[in-house]
Length: 131
Image 1 (cartoon, rainbow, N blue to C red):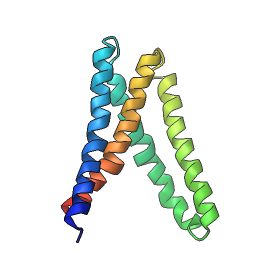
Image 2: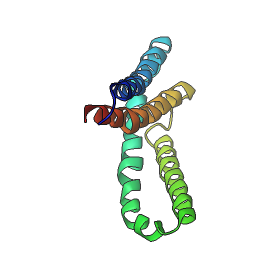
Image 3: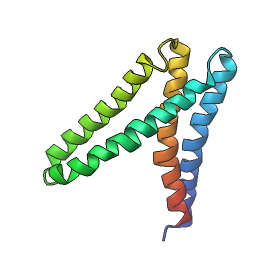
C-alpha cells in the first residue's frame, strides 16, 4: 500500500508524462501549420513496433542467456535498444518519411519520444497509483 503522498506524486508524474508530449505536439503543430500530424503518429507507431514488439521478441530469447552476468546483461540491453530503435528510425526515414523536412522529423521525434513517455512512464504510474 502506498501513502497518499506517494500516490499523488505518481499521478502528477503520470499526468505530466502524458500531457507534455501531447501538448508539445499541439503547440508545434499550431506554430508550424505545414507540419503533417501523421509524422507524430508514425513516430509513435515506430516506437511501438520496434521497441515494444520486435525488441521484446529478441529479449525473450536472449535474456535467459545473459541474465547470469551483469556486464553481459547491460551490454546486451544497451545494444539491443540502440539497434532496434535506430533501425526503426532509419527504415522509416528511408521509406515512409523519405521526403520529410526538419519540422516533420521533429514531429516524428515528438511522437516517438512522447509515446515512450506515455506508455513506459505515464501508464505505469497510473497503474501503480490505482493499486
